[in-house]
Each structure stands twice: as structure tokens, then as C-alpha cells.
Image (cartoon, rainbow, N blue to C red; front, side, top):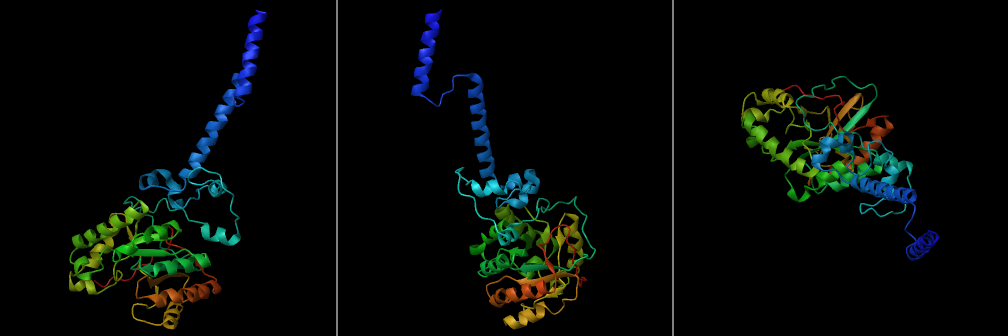
Length: 333
């Protein structure tokens, strides 16, 4: 028996010399195995937070609003900054007050169109609030607009079209930066869109498909071409705006008009754009209409002055969400 024990002891010693990573005793080996599995799971989870697919959006709940890689709970922020998508450990990044202000992304898990969600807010906010909204993009001016918004740590809302397919990927860029993406129109051709209610919903379905392809879901926020008060639609179908205003809400959308316009549909100078955008600053709740289009360089140029004006007036900048005060025009058709 002593001889057998001696042989086993010598064999174990040789094995440990040749393979120091091996642990003979079961409890230590199990602990090491569990630690390794836990570490791998942590790396996998952290790298998985870098992207949220459309299918994951509904299941992930609040994580849907953090497709840029920040967890909804916030505790993963440190892990996300120190683990790459490949699972390799990298140096943690310094966090500044400025970068935190710009990286905070609101919960957007309930932004998908849903006919069962009808609890919209029609009350004015208790604090001065402004919503910067941009129609007609994305365009060649989108990046300039996004750069300015990043500089000031401001979130905005983009009601998008499919007019410039070469810029379509900017829809995802807008969303990933924490801005709200809404639906405007696929074609922006009034004669087609307002030919009938069926024609309108066909156009809406097309732009919804484009946006879903970029951000993984169809948002509930829409803006009618020309706004709900447009009179041009009567030329093609009498009473269509009255019908559509109710119909879109019945299927889960909410339409947003505006109560201040920068006037860039007709103005051509940066100075005029700023003057128009700041003319009605006495309102508590401002939904500011602007345009993101290739021929609207003056709007992009005016944006810093507009933001600084309202910051100095004590306004809070927000992107539209389900808690925002709804802004509707008086329908004219």
C-alpha cells in the first residue's frame, strides 16, 4: 500500500511540473472552472450590449433605448468602456462632465407604435421646455446638425423622409446618438400622399419600413407633410386631414405639429432664421419647426445661436417622447 501511495505521489508531482495550470484537488478545479465560465459570460454580455437588433428591441425593454452600448441600469457603463466588442480588455476611458451630458440617452423602449398605448399628455410642462424638430432629412446637412447638437449636449427629434437614399444610414446615426426618430413621409409628393387616406397610409408604410430597417422598430411619432393644418391637401381630397388626424391615432401613432417655426421654408439668411426661431420665447412649451435639407445650410448655421438663446432663457432641451406635451394645429381640411 505504501508503495502504491508513493507511486501516486510521484506521478502527481510530475504532472504538476509538466502542467502547472492543472489543479489536482477537485474543489480548487471546480472553483477555477466556475470563475472562468463567469468571466467568459461577463465578457459575452458586455460585448453583446454594443448592439441591439430589431428582434431584441421588444424583449430588451429599456435596453432598446441604449443601442449605443450604455446599459439601462447604468452599472454596465464602466464595463462597456473597458471591454471591446471582441471581448478584449482595453484601457478605461476618462469620463468628463461634458461627455456624460452628451452620452445620457433617454429610455426609448416604448417608442414603437402600439395601438393600445393612448395615454398622451396634453398638459403644459411646469418648466420651460423646448423641442427642436427637423423635417425632411436625412440630408447632406444632417452631420453638421448632429455635430452642433453634440457640442451643446442637446437631444432633438428628426421627422425623416426617403428623399435622399445616399443619406439613409444617417437615420441610425441620429438614433444611436440618442435623438428621437419620427416618420414624416416617403415621397413628400402632396398629390400622391393626400390623394386618399389609403394613399397616405401607403406612403406612411413605406417610410416606416425604411426606418425600421435602420433602427429596428417603427416609431409612433409622425408629422404630416405641411402639418395637420395644411390646406394644400384639400386640392386632392376634401376632408382628408380631419380623417387622418383621427385615423393615425386609432392605429397607435401620434402626430406632432409645431408652435414656433424658424421660417426656413421661405427665409434664406442665417440671421432671419435665428430671428424667426426666437420670436416667441414667451411660451412654456415650444415645439420648434426646422428643416434638415441640402438647401437649408442657413438652418444648420443658425442652430448654435438658437440653442444659446434658449439656454440663456432657461429652457430645457428635450427630444420628443410619450410624456411630451402634444402640439396640434387647428385642422383646416
